[in-house]
Image (cartoon, rainbow, N blue to C red; front, top):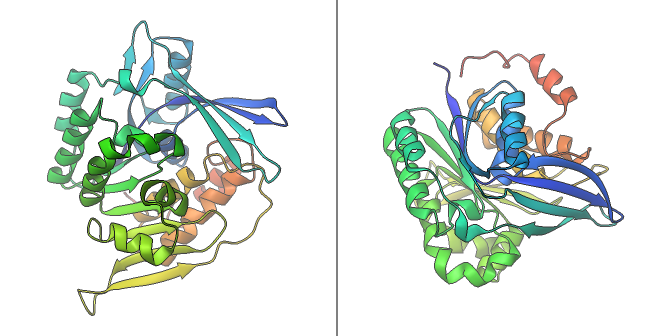
Length: 316
């Protein structure tokens, strides 16, 4: 059986605005965007999430299936409404978000959790992040999933993706964030995440904050330099720091940029690209593809390019 990528995260309906006019509406969510792009690229994917018992919920499940992602573990809550996010593009085509969500009502069906715990296998990849991964309302279920994945021998990728609107929640969720970092094989965060979490923006200071909790750490900063911290094989007490420039492009929208960076990095791992440089190069390629269009996922053009590359059919 081919290895799977299991996404654990929220779903929303993303409505994108430019000059105060709606441009596009599409199912989204941080982990959701990553998983859909991986599904489009031919990777065996499963999404663990929740939706309302409404038309948006049905549309979301159909969208997953149409992009090659299993919706078997999507919890559908009758009598509730799905979440909505408005993304407003500014003059630089950077997105500012307004969220319409009820985090306190989040729930994952117990039977679904039990089945997922049984299905975690050695070699699976688990991608998780955002407030869904630290929400106190569902933390017991999410924590159980993550610990069982760790015990099963899965490989875990954590995208912190912490929003400004959750700053008041920090005292209640910081412990969950730190536990997630400890469980993950790779942690990615943006400078903006750590400005909100710790009030710091210097890369070295950020690393000092997260180093007690994780070994492999990726720090992104929009269109600026990417830093990758990995254990130094020659001296175990030290870390190796690699810096990667970001190629400038004409950006149409930044919605989904970080999500597809995560997806591209995971795709590179699955295809046997082992060095940080190879993985970051693929991650940037996926991220920049999304930035060149209005949408949350990689384009048909990139999917076709990937199909023509030597490692596309490599067994994963």
